[in-house]
Length: 473
Image (cartoon, rainbow, N blue to C red):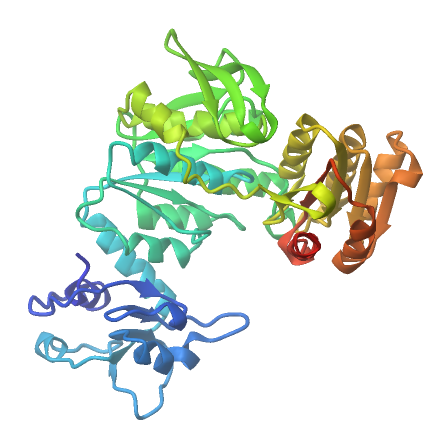
């Protein structure tokens, strides 16, 4: 159990044996504070956590990490200077602990706490599919081990430490998604979490705008396998089907396990059959064993997700029965969900985010379904110099799949243009400015038997389209 003693030692380097009060949680959002929580006042782009310390205390937080002057009515102990263990042990809560940098101290506390535990850590990164892989991998491991996973998308330099502080001595495995924007970020997360197993999903031009180049993106993702322990304790699970991922084997001292659709991989799949909204069926091969699988995941691309989770299960010593049970877990969180639309239509809500590979995967699922297929596709953001090429690639595939395309946003006009150039009749392609225009168009056009895919970057608020269509029932 994480206690105040752990927090004090991470900040000051000194033991305070009598400070045994448990730290119930660690949060940066004061609204999530519970009695006994540690509130980290982190400066942000849109809000500064220091403005919400009082709110956190009112909700029961015991300690707030701060890095600036606080109002006089708040008790503040300045830990930038030496403080006696007796004074720390006698502190009455709630109290503000002033440090040089709250985020760095949060990271240090999380690192020290992780180092104190014997848990095995599985790190997952990649351009697309990290979250679904995390969820399914945790589902597989939970059949045998007490497993922690980072909730939601708490996968960055703040979210991952917050997740680690939820570990207890009872946990045996931790499955941690690791986000990336710039080189060096995953290396930092690895120093904090010390993963034993690293899973790479794929590499694409997502976040090109921030990273600057494909070389930078590859280098950033490679940091996970570079920071794994040597074989046999460390294992790098790599996508054999992607050359940029496959070559990462040269950058790690860990044992390499390949997965993919090629028989050259260690764990591979064939005989893939998409079952639409009923999931996907395929055959897995591993060390001479042949396993027939059906999973409730949507789209043929989900085979790779199942392979990743299976690979982790095999590495961690699970048998096929446990792995298959985990793959069937109905609690699996899928971002693409099917909801009823107006006049008997079906809406595929995949509005969480968008990048060319994930949009094409969603279009491939649309192709498996019967009915008039409508693709509502919004701008894909943060693609940098790959922006036009990525949208046109999606437009070409959409032309092969959809009966009607509705492109939403300035960048999505490239989708519309490319679809027409690929042979789609221009009267079936609509380039609209925003989600409101799309809502007006769809309410008049969607009918019985239609299947409508809605997908775009979060900044495009494509979720408003789904909500409006559900309200029109």
